[in-house]
Length: 195
Image 1 (cartoon, helix red, strand yellow):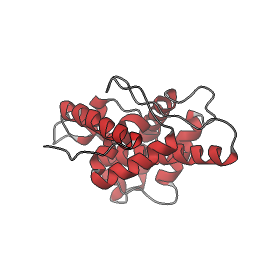
Image 2 (cartoon, one colour; image 1 turned 30 degrees about the vertical axis):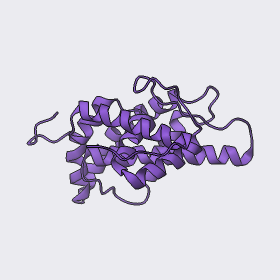
Image 3 (cartoon, helix red, strand yellow; image 1 turned 90 degrees about the vertical axis):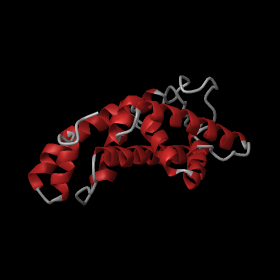
Image 4 (cartoon, helix red, strand yellow; image 1 turned 60 degrees about the vertical axis):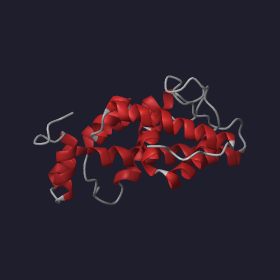
């Protein structure tokens, strides 16, 4: 983790942009674009073979949704990557809905990282999106972790660093979130979390 008196360069630039320093946006855009491109490539590596959405298209669409027509008002790097993860999820879901509506073949599938649980991946992207919406009603933080890890392709270590949390807690909560999603997708009643 970075010391508190030395914020991450993206956090510092986001603050300068928020304060209205136009030159800060010129410095910020290449940094976040590179990172978003890396996250988009990572996210799409888990998609089915022959997926029609390319990393460049995903990053451009996400980038446009993040920055089009207004200066970003992100408070820090964690906030930025949380929003970017949600935007990537929305882009992938919109793409899946379009494909499903056009009935061009099998729907887009998202595979969860099997290292987090021994249970094989389950569900298509539209089902997963609905399950995430249901989980968000109960615990929005878990959904943010899932979005950062599985939609933005961030490692548990990157999520922990971005959120200034312990990597052990992030890993635990990701396993717990995946188990809850599995129950939602399978239609099994979700038991309340014991802290």
